Length: 335
Image (cartoon, rainbow, N blue to C red; front, side, top):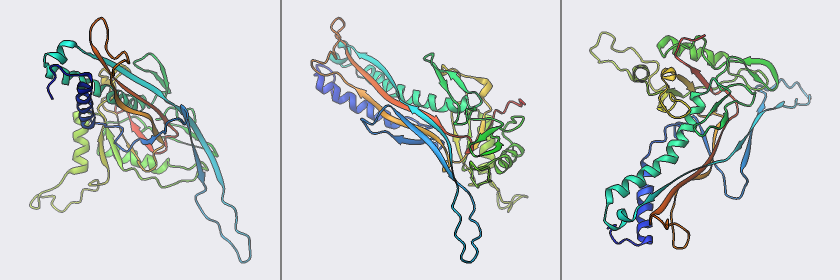
């Protein structure tokens, strides 16, 4: 479609196509990782959602002849209330761009516009991991974001509490080692020894995700453990790689960033394990990223400049109920 002498309806149709095409091609590392459960929130159902957990005790009990069966115990866990935040950016398409066939400039503006909401959603999601050892952070808009789980502790903490037991559990690896065979086994052991229901009973919660930042050394180390193979003629031929197929490796390239999205080398070595099946990290979608287009008589054209204004809009919320499904090491050797 040519852009010279384009009508508003023609141009908007083209803009929609460009925007959607770009939106579909953007990487959504955290959203699609399995770490977060995505919940679509229907229209006209309020601006908040409460998420809570309820545990049933782990074991049945003996029933002797003619005895009444005992009643199963149910324990209400913690809850978190998620509220929606809307996000937006606008951009102008000049008179010259649409009248003089400046197609590359138009495409660049619309594709960049599509990226903004998706990138911000990824930043917010990945900051829940990048700031997992903190109870809050100040985001790039200057707002305080609470990152606590239902027990009021940081997502990654050494003494999480349970609602129905005095037992505590940790999900941040002691001494925060970098990813290695020994560190990975230490984290696996930590999970074995610190996986409880609200009654303080040990439960089975297998991890299926090994997540890392985009640090090349950490990525390569993960790949060596997960994908290493041996030649049939090699001296170690026939040796089984016990990690082959055990975990999905998920690379989160925005974890090692500041609240403003700049590089943060202090987080470069973050890594951990997680269970996608038992995740209690929720992403609520009130409004998927979409293009807001101008139309006749809706003030879409700026009178002084003759620009047609286009925008991206989206709305979502994020909350994490507990930390039992998630494990982490900062990789910096800190106590």
